[in-house]
Length: 269
Image 1 (cartoon, rainbow, N blue to C red):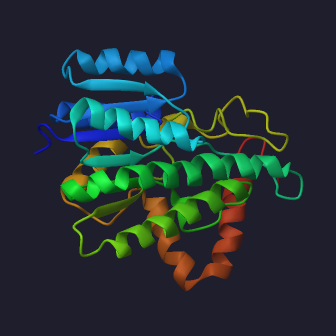
Image 2: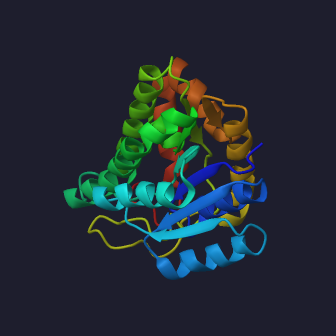
């Protein structure tokens, strides 16, 4: 189905972004992969080229609108069209709101929210031409605020609302919008999560081996794009939160607090 279709994936140098790029490429898509770390990105490009020569790596920072515009323009210059945009690039944070430097929230919002807005804005005309897909790789945090992650939750809530608006505005134009919430996935995002002073966390406070693999998430995202689904909530934990947040939010406040308080080095107890 994706033979000769063109897909842009941001944050493609590792984790879900890398796995998603490989999954679409294995299914015939021409892929444009973008990330800040060009060395890691080139390794992903080489891996994909072993079975799909139509891959193009672009060094870009989604914090910068000009870089997002560059990703789309270079994609169109090389392949002449765009069928799918996967907004995957993102960063996390972990600190009490009362203690953190507000620049941490600004940084998380700039990357997670504005990066999605910039890329979607510049890609939209081409996606409307092909009646293509916009994908937002979100989180359970897009539906339920998570303690110690105020900036991350705020950004994901914002992206959720933004993409719902984009979907509704283009409901009669053939644009497909997928809001994907994989749940906790094995990736580098917790290692690079920002602490209260803006420094990186350095290690994951969770048991990565017990999480969903990035490859499994990529397969689910691919199938959801193929079927043009509107939402994807993968984990059992995520589905419970989605339901309980509607029907018993007060109870959920305490349950979520207790769950995250168990993390190694939790900023609250």
